[in-house]
Length: 389
Ligand code: SF4
Image (cartoon, rainbow, N blue to C red; front, side):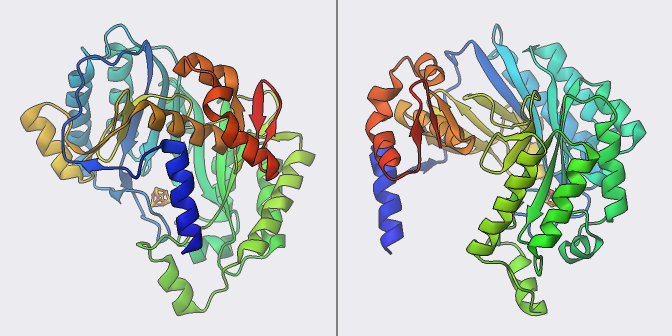
């Protein structure tokens, strides 16, 4: 009750509004008032959906892939005039599992995006250990993919079995090796900790393996029991132990030490990146347009989300030739600032100059009092040009 009240108070202090209103309306998209923007492509297919996963995905069905690609083409066509003269400075493909579309439309979509828009960057994509081999890596490298992020989760056969992941530790290592040896600018792998019955020693084993394999970045997340996933029921049914907050904190400290000892730096709450490597991140730019079923977009004035259902997404685009927006939220300038700030806090660093340039406002005048309070609470440090969390 008290924490809920605190959360509401902080939210009101930051946003100056009482809450977010979801609306079933189409955002106005006549003029973006931007010179540059990011693109996000959502590929909602997974070959083997995981029981702990909260993301929107559908079981991979080859028959849906080409109609899906054609619908994305329609969406690209819709945005062509809106993005005329704008630079695309970030292009990220997420899912689901984007690489399920290799040889099934992914290359065509990437090419279409490069030939339609003024893309000034390479591609970053998520992938899965079972999708990686020399041939698929060649396809990715041949289609401007420079940064990859693979959900390994653990190298241990025992924990992979508990999680129901459809590969073993040997395959996970082979896939990581294939990525590391094939010239990507950044290879990130996701490792989960706090798995059912997992000890700190087990976590240590995963991180050491990742470091030995030479990955550029490790994103280490605690497993979360989201309400609408099966994980909670399975833990209860099998009598597994799930680590509490203190155990998880100790695990994270151990991960932190291993990564720092290996010469990595912290680049977000959960990520550690090799020195000299540009961090892999999906949130590099304040405004972006999302393509695909369930994709979100943030443009000046609005945040909106496409319909999640793949068939509905395809049907709507074929019929109306415009994105099937399911929900829209009016975003005022203050809310845009908070959104920007949220991701910078996630990255553990806020560069005041970036804020001043983006919003044409002074960071200290806008958020100075809040960060003074956070400093007094020992949660932030003001280093004049930047805030370090
Ligand atoms: S492969 Fe990734 S996106 Fe797909 S269900 Fe598993 S965790 Fe979720």
